[in-house]
Length: 260
Ligand code: NAD
Image (cartoon, rainbow, N blue to C red; front, side):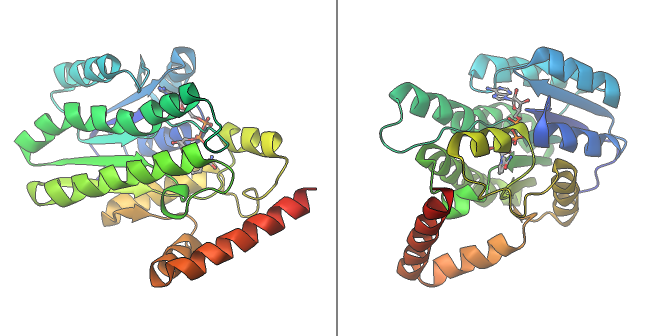
């Protein structure tokens, strides 16, 4: 899709990947760039930098999404591109607290559902629109140390797949950004909590990820893989699931022993 002259919304834009993506999209001369974040101050300071508009918004609250979409459509008449990027990480397995499982489900999955629920009617009426979801390589390949993260990212990927299948012939473009490590606060927190450097090897700057998203949108690719090796890992998983699981077990054991 041609990006110039578009009305674009980016969530989770105050920091990290969202911030870099908003700055990159600003250089494409959009008609309007709306940057949303739960951190209203961070979003406002970015909006100044990119000559955009900021909206304080908790993406896990449907009322906040409804208000965001309504405000943008009232002022600009439409939303061409919605980057549903905000997300959080929760580590552990089944022992993680119910409240943490519930919170990550709401932020990493339901936010995309609410966004689709409210932007699709306008996009379908115009038979044009682009929804870009920030998922993660964890949506394709799971995450050794964070079941709530791997599970919610897989669910998000499945939802975006569904959107692409059901609405692709009605002019709706869908892409899923699935990076491995990206040098943001989220990754820094993960490394300090786990004491394992595993994702910092090969971690990309958020600006490189933003470039990959713009390229992927230009090509209208469903999967945007800033780390190209993820495509090969995903192929191996599909080729022989049991072999892939054995390899993942071996890798997890070796990472744990290297951390001791
Ligand atoms: P980050 O923590 O650096 O930034 C996340 C931003 O989202 C922050 O500005 C935060 O305030 C905002 N946010 C959090 N919860 C929100 C909510 N409920 N409503 C609105 N805004 C909210 O994280 P990041 O690394 O930039 O992550 C962005 C996305 O990329 C996430 O979906 C994450 O899962 C995904 N991702 C990150 C990595 C990585 O290694 N950093 C890898 C793959 C995928």
